[in-house]
Image 1 (cartoon, rainbow over the protein chains, first blue to last red):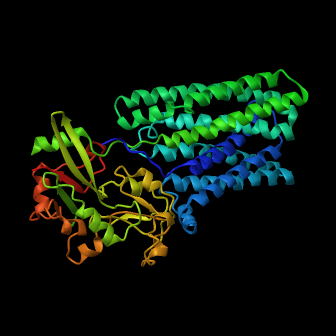
Image 2 (cartoon, chains in turn green, yellow):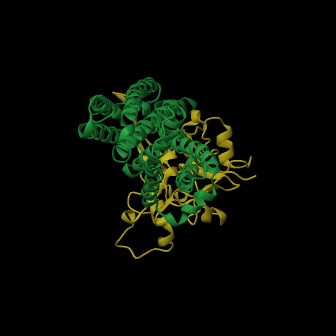
Image 3 (cartoon, chains in turn purple, green):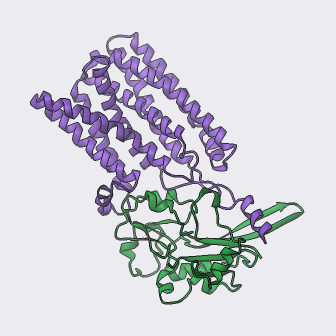
Length: 292
Length: 196
């Protein structure tokens, strides 16, 4: 019997993963730019994070068969990564709006605390899709450490691109620094995508499900196509870096939109490539007959 | 302690699908939903080939993956080892359907509802939730066998208490000839297969 494919998690779940990953990464980029580079991004950019996460939750909500029971998942945080993810997302939305409120009220001591809390929650939101997939023991392509790493990096690059998109309108003077960060993240993304494929291929020699996942990821429109689009994004970011004025914004926007597209499509491909291990194996049949 | 288990003799199953039909009728399952099904497997190399029929259903695992991932605690395990779903708690996220290593769970949505039939009992509670084989627990509590066991014309399925040393199921499991699917992954299925 061949490995079977999961068909339940599709584009809407991918959209939730994409939106929550992008939204939380925006905050991480915001926080790290202040901490490492001492560069304060406009807090209005931060507003996009909770909005994206709320949009992701709405999409996830529409996917539920009985949304009226959603509250039970919030109440059962110890049960699964799906429940934890819902809680992290809700906390992040609260923290995001809390930061905006603290900034508006100029309550800086409170801001310091909520900034740190927001960073921790953003990290949790960032890792939850990877952990949720990792918990599916029977799908080898998901149940590996490389899945965690690759989902994390794709989320971060999406966040970087979303910050460029938002700041092009709100804080254009921040664009050069953000372009450098986005180029680094996109380069990491290409490397991680390739490493993920390598990890899948080596796993595929031992597990049939992983082998089919690898083939699915290799197909037209798969990870390599997305990596090629990311190379184009990097080129666009480079051109934008050396440009000025309106041209810089337009090229930076094109690059960030392309990165966001690849970040979303990667999630779709990852979910589509979810192959279980075969239920009935030759080994099982042989051992039964040998015992007869 | 009671622990329900089933032993299926693959040497006796002819793939007539009487169990599949009986299960569908008894549980009034929707389109494409089969709590129990029979899979055809070809083994060997030409000219020494053989066709086997392997009945599949929820394995009522010792350590169920579906239970671990359920965010609302809708999936639970009874003391006698049966994995069940509380429809009132299920939010229909389908995480358990994805996590099940045996493809034994189904999401019941409007498109799977037999439209030509009158609305069945519990229809509103069923819609938007996940469902699966419950080992016909209501029948079992009344002292009957699950409907698939009852219907099999070749008595390929044996059902009973695996912890009762006098039961046939216990003896077959203890004989060392019975095997479970995906044994090496440690799910600890309560459905065993045997060949004789």
